[in-house]
Amino acid sequence: MAAASSSSARGRHLLLRLLALLAVAGNAAAAGSGPVVVGKRSAVLSLRELEWGAAAVKIQGRYAQQSKAQILGEHRKAEGASRATTVLELKHHSPATISDQPAGSEGYLSRLLAADAARAASLQLPRAASLQSRQAAAQVPLTSGIRFQTLNYVTTIAVGKDSSGAAAKLNVIVDTGSDLTWVQCKPCRTCYAQQDPLFDPASSATYAAVPCNASACAASLKEATGAPGFCARGGGGGGNERCYYALGYGDGSFSRGVLATDTVGLGGANLDGFVFGCGLSNHGLFGGTAGLMGLGRTELSLVSQTASRFGGVFSYCLPATTSGDSTGSLSLGGDSSFYRNTTAVAYTRMIADPAQPPFYFMNVTGASVGGAAVTASGLGASNVLIDSGTVISRLAPSVYRAVRAEFARQFTAAGFPAAPEFSLLDTCYNLTGHDEVNVPLLTLRLEGGADVTVEAAGMLFMAKKDGSQVCLAMAGLPYEDQTPIIGNYQQKNKRVVYDTVRSGLGFADEDCSYHM
Image 1: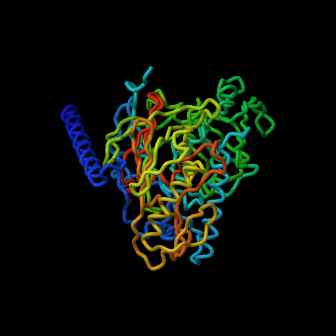
Image 2: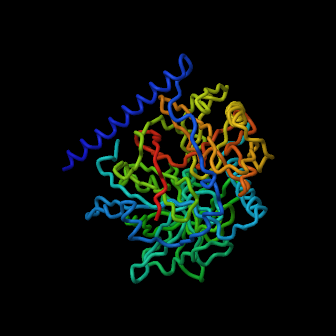
Image 3: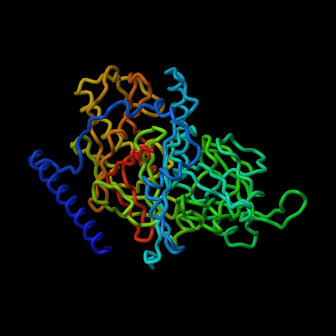
């Protein structure tokens, strides 16, 4: 049965490759002697797909375990401890507080984009043996974070176990640009408002503070946060010395608290002794979530802590819509049977930067807009960061100018008038009265020949609900030598695979909206 399944999968991939080759041949014939561009040149976009307010209809703070298990693959969970298969949701929740008045919506979105600008700035440097044979797989539902007042993506994890075996269900931001996973904890000295109840360590029978002499408190914590842990005795007049962490982000956000271990549940998979931060003082751009899941590259990241189980491989599929019942997935492990990709996964080299150890980089060697190649000095000149925690992509100034000029040439030629700038977005149009528009698509050519074409819904950002201000969803960096970033808005409806063992980043087209 396994051999037959493998043969069927190979046949499907061969068929997809043949169709891709035929598409390339057709494009080449149409373009004559011009440059060959792989991927769709343009796509029709319904403006309803860009609406933020429609996503506020349904609000859910807990799993709907059984139905989501059936749709996203939790029912495939293996019997033995050596292999677990489960599903994590990724959703783009809608804000329950978003105003029905256009001015309220615009102000709200403007604040979120300002927060994203701070995030992107914080990622910039100051100027001046394979485990695959032991690999298990876990898939976790992934959703949009709009309901939690963030444009990032959110998943639900279970933390701790009380005397009855129950765990706290907490919604956390999924961030490939961070390492330490942390949640807000009781007794919280200074905490921002979150929608879930605070995690109470005293209620968990499996919770333990990390002792000061543990390796996680010194070198590992310093690599993950930039500062080693420090020792102090617990509150209440007693207790042994424990390790405290202080994690600061470049945008001014921070989390400080106890470094601890506990059981963490990712859908149906339980991770015992997982090292995380129990935040007692937290502030910043986290919306109403309970904390953050770190998927970076250092020892304390979830990827590294679970490498012996999941093989150092993970992937995600970010839903394009902000509907509360639209669910993507975060997959831990390299089992591609959970993917629903419509094109084969194409890989490029994953690059590490010693100056920025948590981050994932790749090289972008070329670009086209609507099938027309663009040229710029910034293409291939530096590493490009791919990040799930940044929303809007930031391109090198030379690249952004070239992309913007070609997009504007094609879009303006279709008769769409210009509109004022919105926040960091400087290329906007008045699409009032249009239900659908034909959008030129950006295709990035990666080192090794892989091509990634941005989804139509990732090309435009709706600033006004009436369509009178719809903007190109990209921005330029201030300086040519800064780090370009591919944000989550341009990763929608893609299966993005991170293989830290083989140092590869993979991309495939996939419909990431699994409606619950």
